[in-house]
Image (cartoon, rainbow, N blue to C red; front, side, top):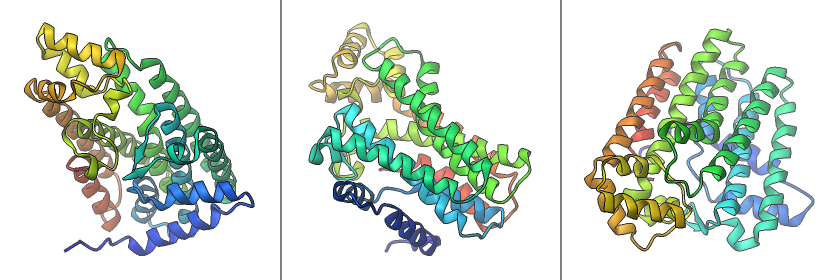
Length: 319
């Protein structure tokens, strides 16, 4: 039996804002926008906005607008990502670019970005604009950094973690920070919230990297081995190469350089045998523990409890 979501009513209100704000006079925008949003997803970023607002006792309707805003920004990045990565499957169905073409996906992603800025202006808080303008700029830098790192088996672990912090963790950080901004929290508490988001986002992405080598396509909603096919040198591969034999290292290097998945089963075996999966999971747990420590700066209430639970769930997941 499924466990009831205590935030279901609030998340429905976020979904109502999302669907209302998606409306456009241009039919293709409506079609693609509703296609990707209706696919669902974890909605973890809007959930962070709501949970931090709850933990800090802010109950105004602006929290729903900003929760929807960060989901629009995230969705825009997905539309652009799938074009760059030439992905064909996301959230268990065809990507928008596979169905509607690259040009339409990029342009609708641009629409979602610009609509997100209209939405953030509507809450009339300059600090909100600062936080989200900074976040979108850093995310864009992360996208370019990842593009530069594609097919590079010599990528340093620190450089890989930098991409995660820019590309994934930054929007988690902004989502957490927004709850504090709405509640007019002091700078020290806003920074603690941001630290939580940054650490949770890093843990979340490291767990995601694991799933490319130990998940299954049905549970993931995307193709297993996609990272390798795209030539992404993720942490499990980088750590495996450190412990692998010369022949195994050559195999992994070649796969990264050429985006080859023909030896995926062999590479998964190497990644497991070298302890790279366990080391990646441990790195994710370290980040989740950092997030947990940051959350202790919040008042002791149900919002904080939910945020602490999220630290565990971000690492121990199968999709």
